[in-house]
Length: 113
Image 1 (cartoon, rainbow, N blue to C red):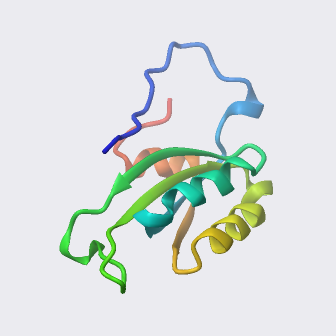
Image 2 (tube, one colour; image 1 turned 45 degrees about the vertical axis):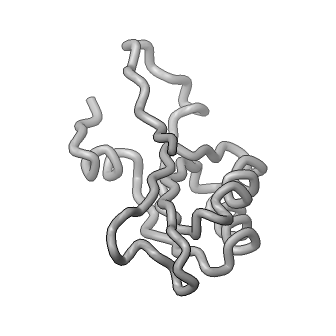
Image 3 (cartoon, helix red, strand yellow; image 1 turned 90 degrees about the horizontal axis):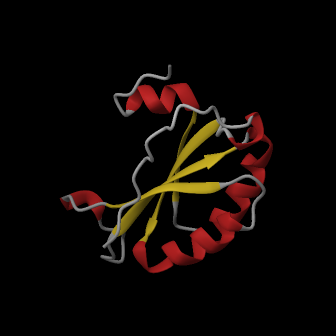
């Protein structure tokens, strides 16, 4: 089991084209998470920030398969491509609320400074 972590910021601002503008949570069965990640990798400017296995009692899908939450970074212009890729790879996936980057940081307990 692997976890992605936020990298410490070196103080040098990222170019605007590399800064994530929005974050989307996607929950899919772990059996298709690799396919979803590959579909997301084909979308322009999209990356998976974190892949978290859901371990609580409600984390199982209808077919009793464990699920994972993918925290996806994307520019707003790629939103349609992300939805299309997720639905093709995992029709039973759950797509969460689209958050701005600052809202995502606040949800994580971090301030954007």
